Length: 215
Ligand SMILES: C[S@@+](CC[C@H](N)C(=O)[O-])C[C@H]1O[C@@H](n2cnc3c(N)ncnc32)[C@H](O)[C@@H]1O
Image (tube, rainbow, N blue to C red):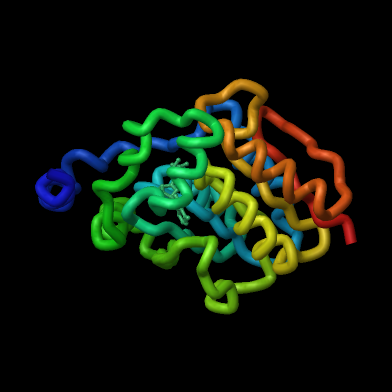
């Protein structure tokens, strides 16, 4: 079923992906773009972990180009949805409904590459992998801004452990799905677990968890 859905999406891509859709809530899309502008002088590129169909990535990179400055933009995703053990952890501990486990699964790197082409944004680099087991030496570093949008406790916690050391001074990570009330209960837990380990207080802006590198 997923296979048929994916093939249909690939064939119909020029029609169904003409319009850009960000997966972020409007206030968080605003804050992400605002952060990109605010941090434009900080050394390093942008990394989005969990890009789905790259709607947010294309919007952000279009804005960067229009403002006339240059920042590399990389996206890391499984391009096949959640890793089963990672989803099962949140289904068990935070009662995430089982049906949500299939979200984002009818996807492929090939499809997202097609979408980038439709929007003439092949300068966004796509990398396939699970952040929890990914060798981060393959990423461009340092990183000035990271949007970590993978919804679940394990990849958020493991992602933060891996990306935080790669941030440049005054670099920032925004973790999506961290408001007080959300069906993605594990996101905030993964974020708070990491903040506790680095002896920092959690800080929330517009429902993002925030990690900033001061020195
Ligand atoms: C909510 S969507 C991302 C939405 C996107 N940032 C946007 O704003 O349009 C979550 C994405 O995280 C990806 N994902 C989930 N677990 C992952 C993992 N362990 N490593 C990498 N990507 C993962 C999924 O495949 C999915 O594409």
